[in-house]
Amino acid sequence: DWTSESFVETTVAELKEQLGNDHVIMALSGGVDSTVAAVLLHHAIGERLHCFFVDHGLLRKNEYEQVLDSYKNMGLNIKGVNAKELFYSKLEGVKEPEAKRKIIGAAFIDVFDQASKDIQKELPEGAEAKWLGQGTIYPDIIESISVKGPSATIKSHHNVGGLPDYMKLKVIEPLKTLFKDEVRRVGKTLEVDPNILNRHPFPGPGLGIRILGDITEEKVRILQDADDIYIRNLKESGWYDKVWQAGTIFLPVQSVGVMGDERTYEHVVALRAVGSLDGMTADWIHLPYELLAKISNEIINHVKGINRVVYDISSKPPATIEWE
Ligand code: XMP
Image 1: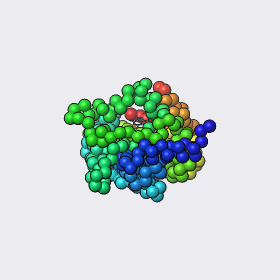
Image 2 (image 1 turned 90 degrees about the horizontal axis):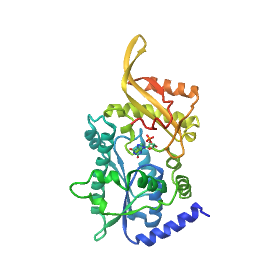
Image 3 (image 1 turned 180 degrees about the vertical axis):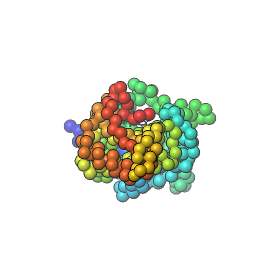
Image 4 (image 1 turned 90 degrees about the vertical axis):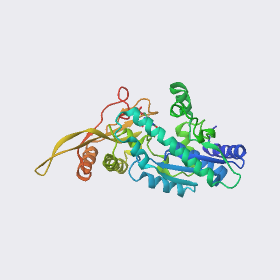
């Protein structure tokens, strides 16, 4: 029978055998899969695993600093790449959800390409990174075959001018036979930071698809502050671990309110919390009214620019989990 201990032992041995003295490059997302894959690779080849973590300016509040710290604490050979300005400038004025996704995906590939060139340059004389580490898990493979065809998204941005450098790398995917709960068990065996292991799923385009309409730094700041209050309250009340995914959405409308005897005309955020097994279907979670009241008051009182909070009571289908 499968145990996480024997999986770790066998996989680390296989990776050592397969990789020999080679170097591996890997982009980490702060999520469970890429982190556990990186820790496994690190056990096998140590400092020859070269990781980086990109700040696209669309992460949760303080997430970049916190995640980078916990990677360093886990002993990974990791570099932070601050690419906020690049992403914000490319996204300026863009409203359409799929256009935003494409821009974020393409900018990410550019950043990745540059980061992997930088890593290659710093390798010892004669050494070359031949491998790209990835946190692919079994359901990702099934999904990409049935829905899009493998690598459809990556290729669509690079059909002219040849492939980016990193695509010449061979892919190594130590978790590709595992389901999510098995990845978590392996992570626990490897003593991965519980904050990362128990984290809700978070989309690659991040807050970029939770700000409806065009993205500005000011909207990112407002949404990060509101979302931080929401998530902290879910954790403090014990609801975070009972919810499959939660997040805050910045709506593209303003609404009228009163503050003292002044009329206000400010932004609205929606709170979303869903239960799900795999994200394919989802039910909205019946959070207690008292908790919702507390979160709403805190957001409106503390986040400048928001005067109204609503709760999303739609399930998937027909609604999706994200609003874009
Ligand atoms: P939807 O909104 O389609 O989301 O019900 C299902 C799950 O997928 C995540 N999601 C994404 N993840 N890039 C990602 O990496 C994306 O563009 C993207 N869109 C949605 C979503 O957060 C949920 O967990």
